[in-house]
Image 1 (cartoon, rainbow, N blue to C red):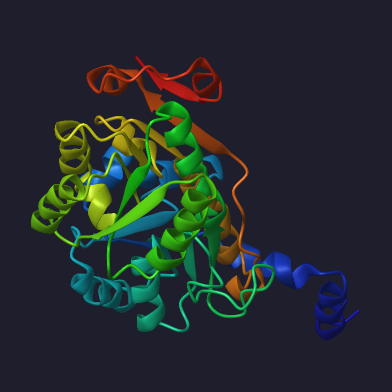
Image 2: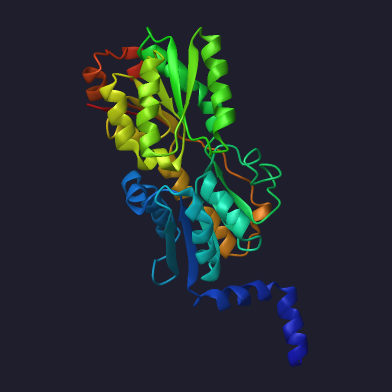
Length: 328
């Protein structure tokens, strides 16, 4: 058999993919990470470490197999596009985004570099995918499933504190995910005979004024919608809720760890760890538009009994039994 026949035989036996894989073995990948929040907030909430742990579990060693280029907007949404541009200029092989705003910034900046949206309430409605099963562009990732879960917050708050009749909802006016979540809360509140008071804020000063508005309008509790600015200001928010004696509910335990009453949502750190599996598949040649968005399978209800005591609340045993974690 001559050399040409040997090559054709090897191709027929599937040796080409193996050769291509061998060529990649010495490659150091460049993974971009973009977040609306701060570096410190991402570390404290465990989201960035969870992603890096996921990469480690898949056999990737930072510095040897990949370089991690992270960019943080420190709560300033206007910075996101420039930061996404930096990652594109660095020729990132994949860009991982934390949240809707960061995802949109990356989406506007590149239509060719694969993007893994590590957390988004509704990928289709948020404009990242044509469908969950087949996104169809350079974007894939994981859904937090918030639209389906957010109504639970009304149930949990009113089960923990039955006297509640008027619930404030803190939302960021520029967050495209807020309107449908607010509508879902209004439907749930109306079903249980409660009222919802929307309060918009986009800065620490507006958050302060927003809580003053809640008190003026006789709010008896507050639900905080997901947003990178709010996550960064979580100590301010939980402090104001406690100061004004408002039982509070959130979509991540990071708030409860610093004084919020309760949180209920998909397990976010698990979601960020799972984002690494998408990066792995893409680095191995998968097209993001053909990778289905993943729905959450693990959920967390975290309750802070210290905060309950400070508010003079006795959380019913029926609610405590549902908790995955109780902070004593």
